[in-house]
Image 1: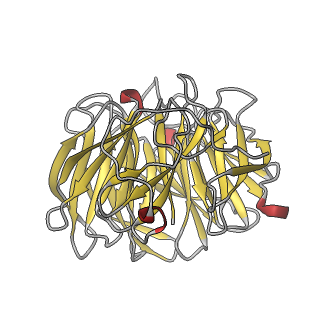
Image 2: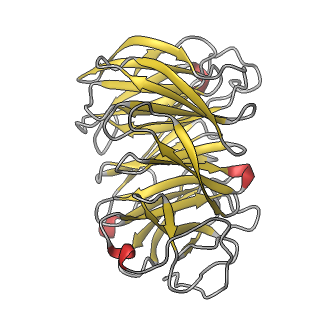
Length: 375
């Protein structure tokens, strides 16, 4: 089914540039935003963003009154994390705490920004909160389900019913938050040979051989009470970074053909908020950022040395609960999805120091929790 544009007048809460040549220019990029749909949001919203000016580009006709400036919306329950492939296939989790937890496959039309829903399957694990794909299989990390689901990719790139549901483990000391298994993230290595997943409640990273069926895992331990959440690779593929939700630490590993060798651990959370969330690097690999919630909400900033280790470069406060953020492909702006402020805040990145400065742009919509670029 198609989700067309809807004409409803919206009032922008921030400055914008007008729709015109910039919409199709080299500096314009499409942004997909996942949300929680418990407070007026309808699903996944699309926007156009000018990555030279740092402002969104208004559509010819306003679309959704709850998300002024958006172009279209794919109506799905709690699409809290999504990914888009080169051919415009979108995989989106439905983060539901029960048997209706799901993974949807959609096709994104880059001409009119509409979505066509291809399929929806159940995850077999509650609260899926992360999704990734290598084009052969799709992976979802199911937080409350404490598992990693593996889905075959079939006709029209649709994700089929899970072929594997791999359980996480427990063992961490936090009696509240590590008493049951949680898996928070699963990504493919740049060479496509491996899958790395965060085993939150066991304070470790799991590595699997990639394929249509994942192998038995190898575990790489982190320090006790870490609560690993998200993992990223450096742009050159030589280093891996993991952020701990509970510890507020960021650990740097050297990477070599599936093996991780710890180099450094730094403390991003200085106020013991136990709510570290997301982690990303600039495309040139010079700066790394980590989002922190629950107290002193904001973004920790680091310079990256030639060996991949980190040097503290400051801190920037944001709105409330920056669960996820994204850096523009040209590395000039960071957009923080502040769930409880009900907006996405835009920050300019200083190319020399990595410092963040709010540019005044705020994109208003209910409970934004995931920002993805269509590159």
